[in-house]
Amino acid sequence: MNALTSKARSIERLKQTLNILSIRNHRQFSTIQQGSKYTLGFKKYLTLLNGEVGSFFHDVPLDLNEHEKTVNMIVEVPRWTTGKFEISKELRFNPIVQDTKNGKLRFVNNIFPYHGYIHNYGAIPQTWEDPTIEHKLGKCDVALKGDNDPLDCCEIGSDVLEMGSIKKVKVLGSLALIDDGELDWKVIVIDVNDPLSSKIDDLEKIEEFDVFHAVILLIVIISFHVINST
Image (cartoon, rainbow, N blue to C red; front, side, top):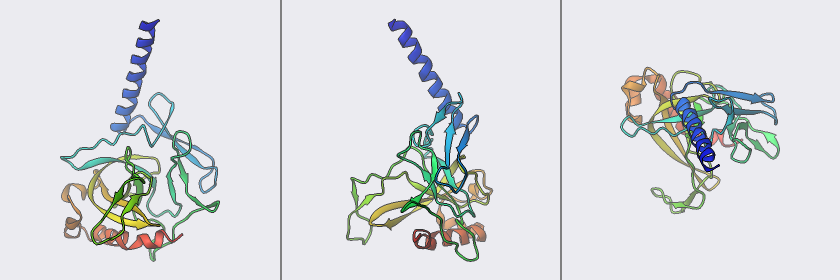
């Protein structure tokens, strides 16, 4: 009996490893949708290699490469769309759902002349901003705690990325925001497959190579007070 149990556990571990490898290689995974978009019943789930439902929060590897400064990104909101979507911490399997406030679906304001988010928006898997640890930043006199969410990331590449897709991105820098008294980091990244990715390694290099990306970055920096006001 013990031998059978041990064998079953080994097989299960092998399945889990294959699932992780398939996601790490950005192959053989997909998503499944429940309900209509822009409704309270909408949910988008991760599906694994074996067809089972997985968790965006737990089953997608970070896949950190410190030398190349790359990580995985889970796309929650495609560029040029207005709905505020996020990975649910509370629902089983942690699907992507639309955020609500006072029972109503949330949308972002447009920033003329653009429509919706001017970047692809998402989260870095296997991360979490701890609400029990205090941080002091720069000249801020107040100690701030994390917002109890995964690290957010803003992808400034040229393409519109699909909700639920997993992208390997290069980290360029970060912004520390204060949202309702909580510390909320925004990590600025670019898809490694974007033509500009191989030319830049930090935020200061963007303006040297591409005016469009420089403008997008500038709007990202000044826009969060507009986006967070709804």
